[in-house]
Length: 43
Image 1: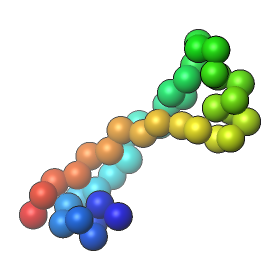
Image 2: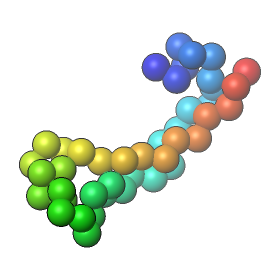
Image 3: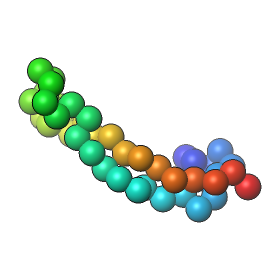
């Protein structure tokens, strides 16, 4: 999707547990909710 938006050199830099330590942690784990940091450059 980022490549289609005109970005290049797209790479996932980090995956993390978005809801760790919150009351919604169990629900997020059940549905596979995660966060990511992405690196991309505009052409």
